[in-house]
Amino acid sequence: MDKFPRTTVGDVSLPRLIIGTNWFLGYSHTSLAKDKFIKALQTQERIAEVLSVFLEHGIDAVMAPPSQDLEAAIREAENKTGKQMIRILTPIFDPLPDGDPESTPEAMFDQAKALGATFCLPHQWVTDTLVDRMHGVIRNIDRYTAMIREREMIPGLSTHMPETVVIADKTEADVETYIQIYNAAGFLMQVEADWVMRIITNAKKPVMTIKPLAAGKLLPVVGLTFVWNTIRDQDMVVIGTTTADEAQEVIDLSLTLLERRLPDNELQRTRSKKSLE
Image (cartoon, rainbow, N blue to C red):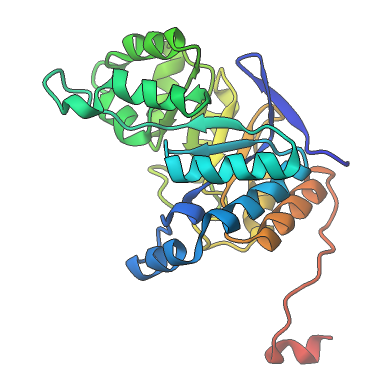
C-alpha cells in the first residue's frame, strides 16, 4: 500500500488519515507547562517538516482553526513537496444576534474562505452551544450551513456531544460530515466508547474521529488499533504529531493495521527491558 486509502466526503476525495494540529498550536490537554513547551518548540519550519511527511504519503488534508501562522506553514510544505493540502477549518463565532461584531458568523466564514478552506465545520464550542436536546434540534443550523455553502465551502459539524450526530441525522441537517471524539480511553467522551462506536456506525455521513490517542495518554499502537478496527471504511482518523518521526510512525502503523497485519515496528528500548531481548 503505497498511498494512504481515501474516502469521499461531499464529492471531495479525502485521505482516511487527516493531520491534526493541537500538537502544533499548543493544545496538549495535559498541562499549561506542556502547552508552553509545544508553543516554544514549534516553528513554521518544524510544522512544515511534519506536514511534508504526510503530504509525501498522499495524506493531503489538515484540520485546524483559522490561523495565519499555520497557513504559512501549510504553504511552505506545499511549496516543498509540490502537493496541495485540503483545508478543513473549524471556526468559532458568536451565535448571539447582538454578539461581538468582530466574530460574527459572516466574518468567521469569510476568514475561513480567505484561508482556502474546502470544508468549514463550526467548532465544538459553537455546535454544542446550539444543540437543544429538549426539542431535538440544532438551533439555526440551516442558516449557518447556507452561509457556508454561499461561500463555496462544504459544511459539517464539529462536536463533543454524541447527540449532535443523532439530531443532525434525524433533522436532515445540510452537512456532509461530522467531527466526533473517539478513543479507547474514553478521554473527553461524554458517554461510553461502545455508545459512540454505535453512533458512528449508524451515522448517515462520514465521521472524522478525533483524539485517537487520548491526547498522548494511549500508546500509538493501542489507540490506532482500536479506532482503525472499529470505524467504517468511509470514516477517518484525525491525529496530531509533534515531529516528522512521529508522523512517519503514525503513518506506518496505520497502514499496517489497515492491512490487518501485526505491527513490526522497532520498539523503544530502556534498561529495564534488557532481559526481554
